[in-house]
Every structure is written in structure tokens, then in C-alpha cells.
Length: 238
Image (cartoon, rainbow, N blue to C red; front, top):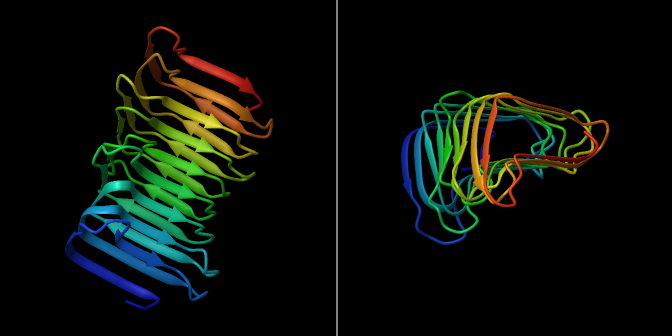
């Protein structure tokens, strides 16, 4: 549909086509836009929810409540270039089905405010579960994160003024790659949840290549590694 304000209630989507998103939202009009997704179950698309704000300049507001988004091959939730507005996600689970390189939530080059409540969980990803890449946005995630083979949390390339806070329970199973904070040019990263990272020969926490303007705070981590895996690695600034 083409509209500046959309509400979807009680929708089941079973998308089996390749290279498709179950729900695709594009902010291209330049004005303000509000979308409400309530009780939406999206299954089997390459991307469960895809939001592209590259053509918009106004406030983009998205409210997601009591929903489920499943990625078949790529990303459960993808947010790209959202410059302004608020994204509020409540009681909504994101699941990747375990295929190679599937990701949970990717927030790319966005300056908006993202808030995921403590009932919004991420599971099943083989790539990063929560991935924030570039932008000066504010991201808060309070739900549970579980990962068996990729990064539970990956934060990289942030601009000055960005903020990423994760306060939920994070579990990385044997073979996962833990938590990575790298190559950030400023901003604040707060990892304050309960972290159980069992990463085998992989490093559990890696902080590398960040500028001196990057403020990083980490607490509550229990790391178990074997062989060449280190519990905590920090190089460069930050």
C-alpha cells in the first residue's frame, strides 16, 4: 500500500519466494510516516521485516507489537538509513532458521531511535544476532539474545553521538563468536546484561580498532573458551 500512515492488525504471512521480505516498508515520500504492526506473524521470507528510509527526510515512526518475524536466508529485521523518528518494538520475537549467515536484527547507517523491550528476543542466527553498523542513532535492546555460531552482538563503524545499549540476557553457545565492538569513530556502547558466552576456540569479547572518542562499558560477562580462544581482547582506543 502507498500511504503515510498504515496500521496492520492480525496478519499471517507465509512467504516462500526467494529474495523477498515478508513485510517491506519504504519511506520515499520525504514527509512524516507512521506504521503500526500489531499481531503480525511473518514466516519464511529471506527477510522478515525490511525497512528502507533512504528516500525519506521526515520522521519515520514504527510501532511493532505482539509479533513474530522469521528469516529464511538473510535477516529477521533489517533497518536501513532511517534518519529520523522512533522505532518501538514490544513483545516481538525475531528468529533466523539457522541457514548459513542468517542474521537477527541489522540496523544500518541509521540516526533514529530504536527501542526493543524486554519481551523482544532474538534467536537462531548463524551470523550476528544484534548488529548495529554505522550511523549516529540510539539503540536499546532489553530482550534475550541467543546465538550458536555467530556474534551475539556486533557493533561497528558508529559515528560520534551514537548510543547502543544491551541489557538483556545474552547466551553464546559453543562455536559462537561472542561480542564484538570494532572500528567505531565515537559514540557510547553499554553492554550491561547477563552474558554467558561459551565460544570454544573463538574469543568471547573482542574490542578492537575503536577511536579514543568511543566510550565502551561492559559488565556481567561469564566467558568460557578453550584452546586459542581468549575471554577478553582489547586493542586500540575506546
